[in-house]
Image 1 (cartoon, rainbow, N blue to C red):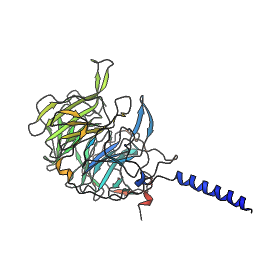
Image 2 (image 1 turned 90 degrees about the horizontal axis):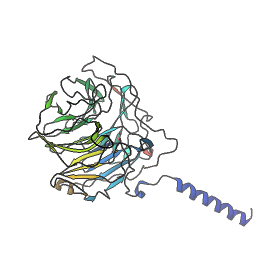
Image 3 (image 1 turned 45 degrees about the vertical axis):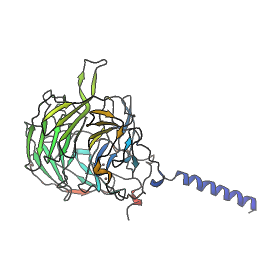
Length: 415
């Protein structure tokens, strides 16, 4: 072979290698801290000094255009403007939406709750310190009844996850991967689909509001808070004065860290024919003082549903979601309880300023492949009644098919 031929061959090999390298997934440490893609119906939760969001879909003119497996954290220990939040990309999963997430009591992992076929539930887990997803999520088959629009809540004392079905409150023990069931009485929490929920630290209870009834309709009388006491395992209606929020679904409900304040914001409402054109989404904002038991209506924002939200210190953070037709593409919004107005700056509470910095393994992030099958919401199944009250059901470990992670094999050797 001539020198010229060898040189040409080497140049071809070099060019090919460079092309292949350019197609390799970008390393996590090289990814810019760009904001997540605009989405709605994603999972979100908070674990200590950070908020987390997982998955979601993008809708334009009422049509789903894309589904994502993006995973991001939002730093709550530093101040930032809403135009430039402190986001960080994390290890992705396959595209998924219509899921929920809770943080483990030790703030070291995020547990996703995903509804599957025949009302099964799986619990993929993300490990914060290693930026990795467990390859084999826990897959379970609880009592088969409808679980539309569930809003799971973590009890940070026991680590149990409370899941509102229709007849029963499913109590999932994360240590044993078993269930207990408690019957939900007919006199309370009558609109159990697509309701809002939050854990109240002061009362060690779970508060529920809104939702749709068994006919998938709004109940005009469902303007009260239903409360489940974890300590006593009893249900009650939380009485409060003032003007409560109108019945709604697909909204955001959050409680302050001390449990003294609960917020209800946005969501889907019964069609409002007093506006033109008629609307069935809202940006109304309500605050419940759980100490004085008083509702107060705050200043409205723009129409929003299917968003993420949480209360940090004296501020209420909201991001993502839908305006009823399109996925919202604008920056997050923040309500300041001190000034009683919407602001453009996040200010961390003093206790977060000195929060110990954690180290996350910066590897294992890859981009979704073209043949990655989206993990969308499960098809609804007929409600199956069961008298198996208090039954204990076991769980199995999956083989990674239900919740396959991207790049997770680099980490081995949380949706």
